[in-house]
Image (tube, rainbow, N blue to C red; front, side, top):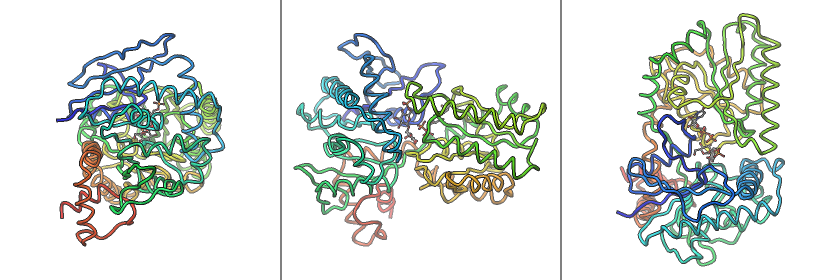
Length: 491
Ligand SMILES: O=P(O)(O)OC[C@H]1O[C@H](O[C@H]2O[C@H](CO)[C@@H](O)[C@H](O)[C@H]2O)[C@H](O)[C@@H](O)[C@@H]1O
Ligand SMILES: O=c1ccn([C@@H]2O[C@H](COP(=O)(O)OP(=O)(O)O)[C@@H](O)[C@H]2O)c(=O)[nH]1
Protein backbone atom coordinates (compact mmCIF):
# COMPACT_ATOMS: atom_id res chain seq x y z
CA UNK A 1 0.00 0.00 0.00
CA UNK A 2 1.35 3.45 -0.91
CA UNK A 3 2.23 5.81 1.93
CA UNK A 4 0.28 8.97 2.65
CA UNK A 5 2.28 12.14 3.22
CA UNK A 6 0.24 14.95 4.75
CA UNK A 7 1.60 18.50 4.64
CA UNK A 8 0.06 21.39 6.57
CA UNK A 9 1.16 24.48 8.42
CA UNK A 10 0.27 23.16 11.85
CA UNK A 11 1.05 19.61 12.91
CA UNK A 12 -0.74 18.29 15.96
CA UNK A 13 1.57 15.68 17.44
CA UNK A 14 -0.67 13.91 19.96
CA UNK A 15 0.71 14.55 23.44
CA UNK A 16 -0.63 12.92 26.57
CA UNK A 17 -2.64 15.41 28.61
CA UNK A 18 -2.36 18.19 26.02
CA UNK A 19 -5.35 20.10 24.67
CA UNK A 20 -6.19 19.41 20.99
CA UNK A 21 -5.21 22.04 18.41
CA UNK A 22 -8.58 22.27 16.64
CA UNK A 23 -10.57 21.14 13.64
CA UNK A 24 -7.87 20.61 11.04
CA UNK A 25 -5.76 18.66 13.53
CA UNK A 26 -8.57 16.29 14.41
CA UNK A 27 -9.47 15.74 10.77
CA UNK A 28 -5.91 15.00 9.63
CA UNK A 29 -5.13 12.69 12.55
CA UNK A 30 -8.25 10.73 11.64
CA UNK A 31 -7.08 10.46 8.00
CA UNK A 32 -3.67 9.17 9.05
CA UNK A 33 -4.98 6.79 11.72
CA UNK A 34 -5.80 4.00 9.26
CA UNK A 35 -2.86 4.50 6.91
CA UNK A 36 0.89 4.24 7.05
CA UNK A 37 1.81 7.87 6.85
CA UNK A 38 3.91 10.89 7.62
CA UNK A 39 2.62 14.31 8.68
CA UNK A 40 4.99 17.14 7.82
CA UNK A 41 4.74 20.80 8.85
CA UNK A 42 5.64 23.55 11.29
CA UNK A 43 6.52 22.58 14.86
CA UNK A 44 4.78 25.72 16.19
CA UNK A 45 8.22 26.91 17.45
CA UNK A 46 10.33 29.85 16.36
CA UNK A 47 14.12 29.49 16.49
CA UNK A 48 17.07 31.57 15.27
CA UNK A 49 18.69 28.80 13.23
CA UNK A 50 16.21 26.02 12.34
CA UNK A 51 17.82 22.62 11.77
CA UNK A 52 18.20 21.30 8.18
CA UNK A 53 16.54 18.09 9.31
CA UNK A 54 12.94 17.84 10.53
CA UNK A 55 12.47 16.55 14.09
CA UNK A 56 10.88 13.10 13.84
CA UNK A 57 8.57 11.37 16.30
CA UNK A 58 6.27 8.34 16.09
CA UNK A 59 2.81 8.12 17.71
CA UNK A 60 0.27 5.35 17.13
CA UNK A 61 1.96 4.25 13.89
CA UNK A 62 2.08 7.77 12.40
CA UNK A 63 5.40 9.55 11.79
CA UNK A 64 5.44 13.28 12.59
CA UNK A 65 8.18 15.37 10.92
CA UNK A 66 8.30 19.00 12.02
CA UNK A 67 10.51 22.01 11.36
CA UNK A 68 10.86 25.28 13.26
CA UNK A 69 10.39 28.67 11.59
CA UNK A 70 12.71 31.69 11.82
CA UNK A 71 11.22 34.87 13.30
CA UNK A 72 11.01 36.65 9.90
CA UNK A 73 9.41 33.58 8.29
CA UNK A 74 6.82 33.48 11.08
CA UNK A 75 6.08 37.19 10.70
CA UNK A 76 5.97 37.31 6.90
CA UNK A 77 4.54 33.92 6.00
CA UNK A 78 2.17 33.12 8.92
CA UNK A 79 1.19 36.44 10.52
CA UNK A 80 1.69 38.39 7.31
CA UNK A 81 0.63 36.84 4.02
CA UNK A 82 -1.34 33.84 5.33
CA UNK A 83 -3.26 35.60 8.09
CA UNK A 84 -3.35 39.28 7.03
CA UNK A 85 -3.91 38.78 3.31
CA UNK A 86 -5.19 35.32 2.38
CA UNK A 87 -7.35 34.76 5.47
CA UNK A 88 -9.34 38.03 5.20
CA UNK A 89 -9.70 37.95 1.40
CA UNK A 90 -10.81 34.31 1.30
CA UNK A 91 -13.30 35.14 4.09
CA UNK A 92 -14.76 37.94 1.88
CA UNK A 93 -13.08 40.68 4.00
CA UNK A 94 -11.00 42.48 1.37
CA UNK A 95 -11.35 45.59 3.56
CA UNK A 96 -9.20 43.97 6.27
CA UNK A 97 -6.38 42.76 3.98
CA UNK A 98 -2.96 44.40 4.52
CA UNK A 99 -0.70 43.45 1.64
CA UNK A 100 3.07 43.96 1.90
CA UNK A 101 5.42 42.59 -0.78
CA UNK A 102 7.92 41.24 1.75
CA UNK A 103 5.13 39.11 3.29
CA UNK A 104 4.42 37.50 -0.08
CA UNK A 105 8.18 36.82 -0.47
CA UNK A 106 8.18 35.20 2.98
CA UNK A 107 5.16 33.05 2.03
CA UNK A 108 6.86 31.86 -1.16
CA UNK A 109 10.16 31.29 0.70
CA UNK A 110 8.52 29.08 3.35
CA UNK A 111 6.57 27.14 0.71
CA UNK A 112 9.80 26.49 -1.24
CA UNK A 113 11.54 25.49 1.96
CA UNK A 114 8.73 23.07 2.85
CA UNK A 115 8.90 21.66 -0.69
CA UNK A 116 12.64 21.05 -0.24
CA UNK A 117 12.05 19.13 3.00
CA UNK A 118 9.11 17.13 1.62
CA UNK A 119 11.03 16.38 -1.58
CA UNK A 120 13.64 14.52 0.49
CA UNK A 121 11.10 12.12 1.97
CA UNK A 122 8.92 11.45 -1.10
CA UNK A 123 9.06 7.95 -2.59
CA UNK A 124 7.70 7.12 -6.03
CA UNK A 125 4.37 5.62 -4.92
CA UNK A 126 3.60 8.10 -2.17
CA UNK A 127 0.30 9.99 -2.19
CA UNK A 128 0.68 13.57 -1.00
CA UNK A 129 -2.17 15.51 0.62
CA UNK A 130 -1.57 19.21 1.25
CA UNK A 131 -3.88 21.18 3.56
CA UNK A 132 -5.02 24.75 3.59
CA UNK A 133 -4.27 28.28 2.49
CA UNK A 134 -0.78 28.40 4.00
CA UNK A 135 0.46 25.91 1.39
CA UNK A 136 -1.28 26.76 -1.89
CA UNK A 137 1.80 26.85 -4.18
CA UNK A 138 3.51 23.80 -2.65
CA UNK A 139 2.63 21.41 -5.51
CA UNK A 140 4.17 23.76 -8.05
CA UNK A 141 7.51 23.65 -6.20
CA UNK A 142 7.32 19.87 -5.88
CA UNK A 143 6.58 19.54 -9.61
CA UNK A 144 9.58 21.78 -10.35
CA UNK A 145 11.66 19.24 -8.44
CA UNK A 146 10.39 16.54 -10.79
CA UNK A 147 7.85 14.80 -8.54
CA UNK A 148 5.09 13.16 -10.56
CA UNK A 149 3.23 11.70 -7.56
CA UNK A 150 -0.49 12.17 -7.07
CA UNK A 151 -0.84 15.39 -5.06
CA UNK A 152 -4.13 16.59 -3.61
CA UNK A 153 -5.03 19.86 -1.89
CA UNK A 154 -7.88 20.57 0.51
CA UNK A 155 -8.90 24.13 1.35
CA UNK A 156 -10.38 24.29 4.88
CA UNK A 157 -11.58 27.88 4.52
CA UNK A 158 -14.03 29.44 2.01
CA UNK A 159 -13.13 30.39 -1.54
CA UNK A 160 -14.97 33.56 -2.64
CA UNK A 161 -16.16 34.41 -6.17
CA UNK A 162 -13.52 35.35 -8.80
CA UNK A 163 -14.01 39.12 -8.38
CA UNK A 164 -12.86 38.86 -4.77
CA UNK A 165 -10.01 36.43 -5.54
CA UNK A 166 -8.76 38.99 -8.03
CA UNK A 167 -8.35 41.51 -5.20
CA UNK A 168 -5.45 39.34 -4.05
CA UNK A 169 -2.23 40.81 -5.45
CA UNK A 170 -0.54 38.24 -7.73
CA UNK A 171 -3.47 35.85 -7.28
CA UNK A 172 -2.38 33.88 -10.35
CA UNK A 173 0.82 32.78 -8.58
CA UNK A 174 -1.07 31.77 -5.46
CA UNK A 175 -4.66 30.65 -6.18
CA UNK A 176 -3.80 29.99 -9.85
CA UNK A 177 -0.98 27.66 -8.79
CA UNK A 178 -3.56 25.19 -7.45
CA UNK A 179 -3.67 23.72 -10.98
CA UNK A 180 -0.43 21.88 -10.15
CA UNK A 181 -2.45 19.54 -7.91
CA UNK A 182 -4.26 16.51 -9.33
CA UNK A 183 -7.29 17.14 -7.12
CA UNK A 184 -8.40 20.29 -5.31
CA UNK A 185 -11.08 19.82 -2.65
CA UNK A 186 -13.36 22.40 -1.04
CA UNK A 187 -15.74 22.42 1.92
CA UNK A 188 -18.86 23.26 -0.12
CA UNK A 189 -20.19 23.15 -3.66
CA UNK A 190 -20.31 26.92 -3.65
CA UNK A 191 -16.55 27.19 -2.91
CA UNK A 192 -15.88 24.59 -5.59
CA UNK A 193 -18.00 26.41 -8.17
CA UNK A 194 -16.22 29.69 -7.38
CA UNK A 195 -12.93 27.99 -8.18
CA UNK A 196 -14.33 26.56 -11.42
CA UNK A 197 -15.40 30.04 -12.50
CA UNK A 198 -12.03 31.48 -11.50
CA UNK A 199 -10.24 28.88 -13.65
CA UNK A 200 -12.53 29.53 -16.61
CA UNK A 201 -11.72 33.23 -16.29
CA UNK A 202 -8.06 32.28 -16.63
CA UNK A 203 -8.73 30.39 -19.84
CA UNK A 204 -9.12 26.86 -18.45
CA UNK A 205 -11.21 24.45 -20.52
CA UNK A 206 -13.74 22.24 -18.70
CA UNK A 207 -12.91 18.57 -19.36
CA UNK A 208 -15.45 16.17 -20.88
CA UNK A 209 -15.77 14.31 -17.60
CA UNK A 210 -17.49 17.27 -15.96
CA UNK A 211 -15.14 17.23 -12.98
CA UNK A 212 -11.90 18.62 -14.32
CA UNK A 213 -10.28 21.55 -16.06
CA UNK A 214 -7.40 21.69 -18.49
CA UNK A 215 -5.00 24.59 -18.42
CA UNK A 216 -1.36 25.08 -19.44
CA UNK A 217 -0.94 21.40 -20.24
CA UNK A 218 -2.25 20.29 -16.85
CA UNK A 219 -5.52 18.64 -15.83
CA UNK A 220 -6.92 19.40 -12.41
CA UNK A 221 -9.99 17.81 -10.83
CA UNK A 222 -12.10 19.70 -8.35
CA UNK A 223 -14.73 18.61 -5.84
CA UNK A 224 -16.69 19.33 -2.67
CA UNK A 225 -15.73 17.24 0.38
CA UNK A 226 -17.38 18.72 3.50
CA UNK A 227 -15.14 18.01 6.48
CA UNK A 228 -16.78 15.96 9.22
CA UNK A 229 -16.32 14.72 12.79
CA UNK A 230 -15.94 11.40 14.61
CA UNK A 231 -19.69 11.37 15.33
CA UNK A 232 -19.99 8.23 17.43
CA UNK A 233 -16.92 8.72 19.57
CA UNK A 234 -17.79 12.37 20.15
CA UNK A 235 -21.29 11.41 21.31
CA UNK A 236 -19.77 8.84 23.68
CA UNK A 237 -17.31 11.42 25.00
CA UNK A 238 -20.21 13.78 25.72
CA UNK A 239 -22.16 11.11 27.64
CA UNK A 240 -19.12 10.27 29.77
CA UNK A 241 -18.28 13.92 30.37
CA UNK A 242 -21.56 14.43 32.24
CA UNK A 243 -20.27 12.19 35.04
CA UNK A 244 -17.12 14.27 35.69
CA UNK A 245 -16.77 16.63 38.66
CA UNK A 246 -16.06 19.41 36.16
CA UNK A 247 -19.54 19.04 34.65
CA UNK A 248 -21.27 18.43 37.98
CA UNK A 249 -19.79 21.69 39.35
CA UNK A 250 -20.58 23.56 36.16
CA UNK A 251 -24.22 22.46 36.10
CA UNK A 252 -24.65 23.30 39.77
CA UNK A 253 -23.32 26.80 39.00
CA UNK A 254 -26.19 27.35 36.54
CA UNK A 255 -28.73 26.98 39.37
CA UNK A 256 -31.41 25.75 36.96
CA UNK A 257 -31.01 28.53 34.39
CA UNK A 258 -31.04 27.78 30.67
CA UNK A 259 -27.61 27.85 29.03
CA UNK A 260 -26.65 29.32 25.67
CA UNK A 261 -23.18 28.39 24.41
CA UNK A 262 -20.70 29.88 21.93
CA UNK A 263 -17.29 28.26 21.17
CA UNK A 264 -14.95 30.01 18.75
CA UNK A 265 -11.33 31.07 18.31
CA UNK A 266 -11.21 34.82 18.87
CA UNK A 267 -11.43 35.63 15.16
CA UNK A 268 -13.33 38.37 13.31
CA UNK A 269 -14.72 35.76 10.91
CA UNK A 270 -16.64 34.09 13.76
CA UNK A 271 -19.14 36.95 14.23
CA UNK A 272 -18.73 37.17 18.02
CA UNK A 273 -19.65 40.89 18.32
CA UNK A 274 -22.91 40.39 16.36
CA UNK A 275 -23.75 37.43 18.58
CA UNK A 276 -23.19 39.39 21.79
CA UNK A 277 -25.30 42.21 20.39
CA UNK A 278 -28.08 39.70 19.65
CA UNK A 279 -27.94 38.44 23.25
CA UNK A 280 -28.02 42.05 24.46
CA UNK A 281 -31.09 42.67 22.25
CA UNK A 282 -32.82 39.64 23.77
CA UNK A 283 -32.16 40.95 27.29
CA UNK A 284 -33.41 44.40 26.31
CA UNK A 285 -36.58 43.22 24.54
CA UNK A 286 -37.50 40.15 26.62
CA UNK A 287 -37.09 41.04 30.30
CA UNK A 288 -38.88 37.80 31.25
CA UNK A 289 -35.58 36.06 30.39
CA UNK A 290 -33.62 38.06 33.00
CA UNK A 291 -32.17 35.77 35.69
CA UNK A 292 -33.35 32.74 33.64
CA UNK A 293 -30.56 32.41 31.09
CA UNK A 294 -26.74 32.32 31.15
CA UNK A 295 -24.65 32.82 28.02
CA UNK A 296 -21.29 30.99 28.12
CA UNK A 297 -18.87 32.19 25.43
CA UNK A 298 -15.64 30.16 25.22
CA UNK A 299 -13.11 32.03 23.13
CA UNK A 300 -9.47 30.91 23.06
CA UNK A 301 -7.24 33.72 21.81
CA UNK A 302 -5.87 33.23 18.31
CA UNK A 303 -3.17 34.85 16.12
CA UNK A 304 -2.61 37.49 18.80
CA UNK A 305 0.25 39.24 16.95
CA UNK A 306 -2.06 40.15 14.06
CA UNK A 307 -3.45 43.68 14.74
CA UNK A 308 -7.02 42.91 13.55
CA UNK A 309 -7.19 40.07 16.12
CA UNK A 310 -5.91 42.28 18.95
CA UNK A 311 -8.56 44.86 18.03
CA UNK A 312 -11.29 42.21 18.10
CA UNK A 313 -10.03 41.08 21.51
CA UNK A 314 -10.40 44.60 22.91
CA UNK A 315 -13.86 45.09 21.40
CA UNK A 316 -15.30 41.77 22.60
CA UNK A 317 -14.02 42.05 26.18
CA UNK A 318 -15.35 45.62 26.44
CA UNK A 319 -18.72 44.54 25.06
CA UNK A 320 -18.91 41.58 27.46
CA UNK A 321 -18.20 43.88 30.42
CA UNK A 322 -20.83 46.35 29.23
CA UNK A 323 -23.54 43.67 28.91
CA UNK A 324 -22.85 42.34 32.41
CA UNK A 325 -22.66 45.86 33.84
CA UNK A 326 -25.96 46.88 32.27
CA UNK A 327 -28.07 43.74 32.80
CA UNK A 328 -26.33 41.77 35.56
CA UNK A 329 -27.16 41.68 39.23
CA UNK A 330 -25.31 40.57 42.36
CA UNK A 331 -27.00 37.18 41.97
CA UNK A 332 -26.77 36.85 38.15
CA UNK A 333 -23.99 37.24 35.58
CA UNK A 334 -25.77 37.07 32.20
CA UNK A 335 -22.57 36.47 30.18
CA UNK A 336 -19.58 34.32 31.13
CA UNK A 337 -16.83 35.28 28.70
CA UNK A 338 -13.79 32.99 28.90
CA UNK A 339 -10.51 33.10 26.93
CA UNK A 340 -9.33 29.64 28.02
CA UNK A 341 -8.86 26.62 25.72
CA UNK A 342 -10.82 23.58 26.91
CA UNK A 343 -10.11 19.90 26.26
CA UNK A 344 -12.40 18.13 23.80
CA UNK A 345 -13.91 16.16 26.68
CA UNK A 346 -14.73 19.30 28.65
CA UNK A 347 -16.21 20.87 25.51
CA UNK A 348 -18.29 17.75 24.80
CA UNK A 349 -19.85 18.04 28.27
CA UNK A 350 -20.52 21.76 27.85
CA UNK A 351 -22.19 21.15 24.48
CA UNK A 352 -24.44 18.48 26.01
CA UNK A 353 -25.40 20.74 28.90
CA UNK A 354 -26.29 23.63 26.58
CA UNK A 355 -29.90 24.41 25.62
CA UNK A 356 -28.82 26.44 22.59
CA UNK A 357 -25.53 26.75 20.66
CA UNK A 358 -25.00 29.99 18.77
CA UNK A 359 -22.77 29.36 15.74
CA UNK A 360 -22.99 32.66 13.90
CA UNK A 361 -19.86 33.26 11.80
CA UNK A 362 -19.86 35.97 9.15
CA UNK A 363 -18.00 33.38 7.02
CA UNK A 364 -16.57 30.00 7.92
CA UNK A 365 -15.09 27.18 5.87
CA UNK A 366 -17.10 24.56 7.77
CA UNK A 367 -17.32 25.15 11.55
CA UNK A 368 -16.83 21.87 13.36
CA UNK A 369 -18.26 23.29 16.58
CA UNK A 370 -21.72 23.18 14.94
CA UNK A 371 -21.32 19.47 14.18
CA UNK A 372 -19.78 18.60 17.54
CA UNK A 373 -22.64 20.35 19.36
CA UNK A 374 -25.24 18.26 17.53
CA UNK A 375 -23.35 14.98 18.06
CA UNK A 376 -23.04 15.70 21.80
CA UNK A 377 -26.78 16.12 22.45
CA UNK A 378 -29.05 13.77 24.36
CA UNK A 379 -31.48 12.68 21.58
CA UNK A 380 -34.32 12.52 24.11
CA UNK A 381 -33.84 16.14 25.19
CA UNK A 382 -31.62 17.85 22.62
CA UNK A 383 -30.46 21.45 22.49
CA UNK A 384 -31.08 23.72 19.50
CA UNK A 385 -28.43 24.74 16.96
CA UNK A 386 -28.70 28.35 15.83
CA UNK A 387 -26.58 28.50 12.70
CA UNK A 388 -25.35 31.23 10.36
CA UNK A 389 -26.23 30.83 6.71
CA UNK A 390 -22.58 31.73 6.00
CA UNK A 391 -20.99 28.72 7.75
CA UNK A 392 -19.97 25.86 5.45
CA UNK A 393 -21.90 23.64 7.89
CA UNK A 394 -25.15 25.32 6.75
CA UNK A 395 -25.11 23.33 3.50
CA UNK A 396 -25.49 20.08 5.46
CA UNK A 397 -27.16 21.12 8.75
CA UNK A 398 -29.65 23.62 7.32
CA UNK A 399 -32.46 21.04 7.51
CA UNK A 400 -32.37 20.88 11.31
CA UNK A 401 -30.71 24.07 12.53
CA UNK A 402 -32.46 27.41 13.09
CA UNK A 403 -30.84 29.37 10.28
CA UNK A 404 -29.91 33.02 10.80
CA UNK A 405 -28.29 35.90 8.96
CA UNK A 406 -25.67 37.08 11.49
CA UNK A 407 -25.78 40.61 10.05
CA UNK A 408 -29.40 41.01 11.18
CA UNK A 409 -28.97 41.34 14.93
CA UNK A 410 -32.71 41.60 15.73
CA UNK A 411 -33.40 38.49 13.63
CA UNK A 412 -30.74 36.56 15.56
CA UNK A 413 -32.23 37.76 18.86
CA UNK A 414 -35.71 36.52 17.80
CA UNK A 415 -34.24 33.19 16.70
CA UNK A 416 -32.48 32.89 20.07
CA UNK A 417 -35.76 33.46 21.87
CA UNK A 418 -37.48 30.91 19.64
CA UNK A 419 -34.69 28.40 20.35
CA UNK A 420 -34.99 28.92 24.11
CA UNK A 421 -38.74 28.36 23.93
CA UNK A 422 -38.82 25.55 21.33
CA UNK A 423 -41.10 22.59 22.23
CA UNK A 424 -39.47 19.21 22.86
CA UNK A 425 -41.04 17.50 19.80
CA UNK A 426 -39.61 20.10 17.41
CA UNK A 427 -36.19 19.93 19.08
CA UNK A 428 -36.13 16.15 18.72
CA UNK A 429 -37.20 16.28 15.10
CA UNK A 430 -34.58 18.88 14.15
CA UNK A 431 -31.86 17.03 16.02
CA UNK A 432 -32.70 13.70 14.36
CA UNK A 433 -32.47 15.30 10.91
CA UNK A 434 -28.98 16.64 11.64
CA UNK A 435 -27.81 13.36 13.16
CA UNK A 436 -28.72 11.53 9.96
CA UNK A 437 -26.23 13.75 8.14
CA UNK A 438 -23.55 13.35 10.81
CA UNK A 439 -23.91 9.57 10.82
CA UNK A 440 -23.65 9.43 7.02
CA UNK A 441 -20.67 11.74 6.51
CA UNK A 442 -18.19 10.94 9.28
CA UNK A 443 -14.56 11.99 9.39
CA UNK A 444 -13.51 8.56 8.08
CA UNK A 445 -15.79 8.97 5.04
CA UNK A 446 -14.39 12.43 4.45
CA UNK A 447 -10.77 11.22 4.32
CA UNK A 448 -11.67 8.10 2.34
CA UNK A 449 -13.73 10.03 -0.22
CA UNK A 450 -10.96 12.54 -0.82
CA UNK A 451 -8.21 9.92 -1.08
CA UNK A 452 -10.33 7.69 -3.36
CA UNK A 453 -10.96 10.62 -5.68
CA UNK A 454 -7.25 11.47 -5.64
CA UNK A 455 -5.94 7.97 -6.22
CA UNK A 456 -8.62 6.42 -8.41
CA UNK A 457 -9.86 8.88 -11.06
CA UNK A 458 -11.04 6.05 -13.38
CA UNK A 459 -13.53 4.98 -10.70
CA UNK A 460 -14.69 8.55 -10.57
CA UNK A 461 -15.16 8.66 -14.36
CA UNK A 462 -17.16 5.41 -14.23
CA UNK A 463 -19.42 6.85 -11.57
CA UNK A 464 -19.92 10.01 -13.54
CA UNK A 465 -20.85 8.17 -16.68
CA UNK A 466 -23.26 6.02 -14.62
CA UNK A 467 -24.86 9.22 -13.48
CA UNK A 468 -25.09 10.65 -16.98
CA UNK A 469 -26.76 7.37 -18.06
CA UNK A 470 -29.61 8.10 -15.73
CA UNK A 471 -28.55 6.17 -12.63
CA UNK A 472 -28.89 9.34 -10.63
CA UNK A 473 -30.74 12.58 -11.36
CA UNK A 474 -28.22 14.97 -12.80
CA UNK A 475 -26.77 17.56 -10.48
CA UNK A 476 -25.13 20.82 -11.64
CA UNK A 477 -23.40 19.30 -14.62
CA UNK A 478 -20.11 21.13 -14.69
CA UNK A 479 -18.52 19.93 -11.48
CA UNK A 480 -18.57 16.95 -9.24
CA UNK A 481 -20.16 16.15 -5.91
CA UNK A 482 -18.12 13.18 -4.76
CA UNK A 483 -20.52 12.23 -2.03
CA UNK A 484 -23.40 12.25 -4.44
CA UNK A 485 -21.37 9.96 -6.66
CA UNK A 486 -20.82 7.53 -3.82
CA UNK A 487 -24.54 7.42 -3.31
CA UNK A 488 -24.96 6.83 -7.04
CA UNK A 489 -22.64 3.84 -6.75
CA UNK A 490 -24.89 2.42 -4.05
CA UNK A 491 -27.76 2.44 -6.54
O1 LIG B 1 -3.57 27.27 13.11
P1 LIG B 1 -4.26 28.54 13.59
O2 LIG B 1 -3.79 29.76 12.85
O3 LIG B 1 -4.18 28.67 15.08
O4 LIG B 1 -5.83 28.40 13.29
C1 LIG B 1 -6.59 27.22 13.58
C2 LIG B 1 -7.17 26.60 12.31
O5 LIG B 1 -8.18 27.48 11.82
C3 LIG B 1 -8.74 27.23 10.53
O6 LIG B 1 -9.73 26.19 10.55
C4 LIG B 1 -10.51 25.83 9.40
O7 LIG B 1 -10.59 24.44 9.31
C5 LIG B 1 -11.69 23.80 9.99
C6 LIG B 1 -11.61 22.29 9.73
O8 LIG B 1 -11.77 22.01 8.34
C7 LIG B 1 -13.00 24.40 9.50
O9 LIG B 1 -14.10 23.76 10.16
C8 LIG B 1 -13.01 25.89 9.82
O10 LIG B 1 -14.20 26.47 9.30
C9 LIG B 1 -11.80 26.58 9.19
O11 LIG B 1 -11.73 27.92 9.70
C10 LIG B 1 -7.64 26.98 9.53
O12 LIG B 1 -8.17 26.69 8.26
C11 LIG B 1 -6.66 25.92 9.98
O13 LIG B 1 -5.60 25.81 9.03
C12 LIG B 1 -6.06 26.40 11.29
O14 LIG B 1 -5.13 25.43 11.78
O1 LIG C 1 -11.44 25.52 23.84
C1 LIG C 1 -11.54 24.94 22.75
C2 LIG C 1 -12.19 25.54 21.63
C3 LIG C 1 -12.27 24.82 20.44
N1 LIG C 1 -11.73 23.57 20.35
C4 LIG C 1 -11.87 22.79 19.09
O2 LIG C 1 -11.41 23.57 18.01
C5 LIG C 1 -12.10 23.19 16.83
C6 LIG C 1 -12.57 24.44 16.11
O3 LIG C 1 -12.89 24.09 14.79
P1 LIG C 1 -13.86 24.95 13.89
O4 LIG C 1 -13.99 24.23 12.61
O5 LIG C 1 -15.14 25.23 14.59
O6 LIG C 1 -13.13 26.36 13.70
P2 LIG C 1 -11.60 26.77 13.40
O7 LIG C 1 -11.07 27.23 14.73
O8 LIG C 1 -10.89 25.55 12.90
O9 LIG C 1 -11.72 27.89 12.44
C7 LIG C 1 -13.25 22.28 17.25
O10 LIG C 1 -12.91 20.94 16.92
C8 LIG C 1 -13.32 22.47 18.75
O11 LIG C 1 -13.73 21.32 19.46
C9 LIG C 1 -11.10 22.97 21.43
O12 LIG C 1 -10.63 21.82 21.35
N2 LIG C 1 -11.03 23.69 22.61
